[in-house]
Image (tube, rainbow, N blue to C red; front, side, top):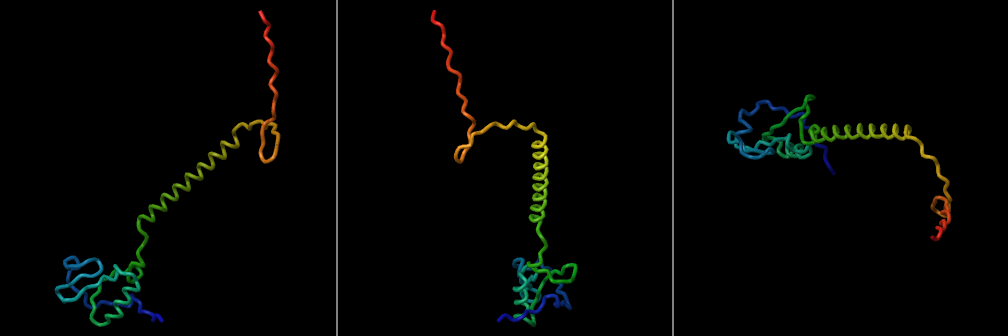
Length: 145
């Protein structure tokens, strides 16, 4: 059974480390600090459950780095705002919708203002329709010279 995990929002750093994150070796998730000899874990580069698990399992001496949003919540990959790709898709979706509405309005205008074709008499036969059969006039005999 899954145990409820602690919320990351209760984390408070009493004495922030003066070491520069950029000067440490490692990747965006974890870097080694030569000053304290520990790995510094970037909670904002992890999923929420992974960051909670790390903090719970290493309760005690663990170095972490994280960002807080405007409401004071710890930002993890789960809380990332929409990317510009999504905004771009929304923009082009709105443009496409507007174009479709304009095309529909133009089509409606053309259909309602176009001269109406005269209905033709059709002979219905079976599952299809065909125009009435008109016999051509007989050929006129040409006089012999």
